[in-house]
View 1 (tube, rainbow, N blue to C red):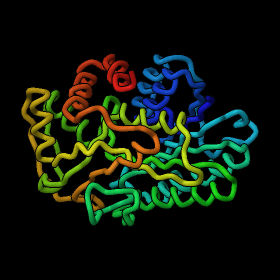
View 2 (view 1 turned 90 degrees about the vertical axis):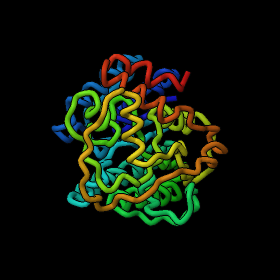
View 3 (view 1 turned 90 degrees about the horizontal axis):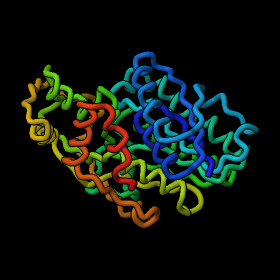
Length: 323
């Protein structure tokens, strides 16, 4: 298939591109490189993605796409956008443009080009504090951050376009993705850096918050299954999580065990929008996509540590669960 991937130079996007190329798909990726502070990391991501095989990359905005040039595209994977939950409090206008405005433009073009399927990178942030865990897709969403609001609104926006233009939407609600190439400001990346290079890790809150961490290659497998397998018509929302939940306090201990080094933890007050727990019920993804997570948290962190010590480890770390 010919697959367009937006946000192709980002953490998740570059891994998805590499996975699609390794499966023999014809990939066209775009990324705006809008933020200067991430350009070096994105260039590294692209180098590693291109090492997986030939594919087309263009440095451009989502809004610059036209229906005529998208003729022949079979599926669109929309990952581009701002994914910083904490920053969303201070830059909601920017997140509205990137996470909703650009999504609206893309959905309109998908309809005009008669592309049959759009796969949307949504988030567990749509749930907020759930009433029951593991949380199912039928749970009432109550986002606790502006970022979560944009993701929930993005799902509804795509559902409206899908109904009007007759294409299918798969919204993958991703639960705390980690792995080689992860953003430097994410907890596991910061813990590994503190363990290997010294310095302190800033812990927000008392360490009892719990997260369901999902290794990036498992996330790639979910995107690939969403491309290759039949899906129900209209909007389908699916949890992509590992049920491998752990408290922040125990996560610190796990990284110390994997690296063999102690971590200097500095405690700060909890941040706005941080929920006390995330934990996915992924049975629907198993039913629809025949997908299930394969990488344990300890194994995934070991791969991420290997990459931190030797960036060439990215190639095998990203692909191992797909073989």
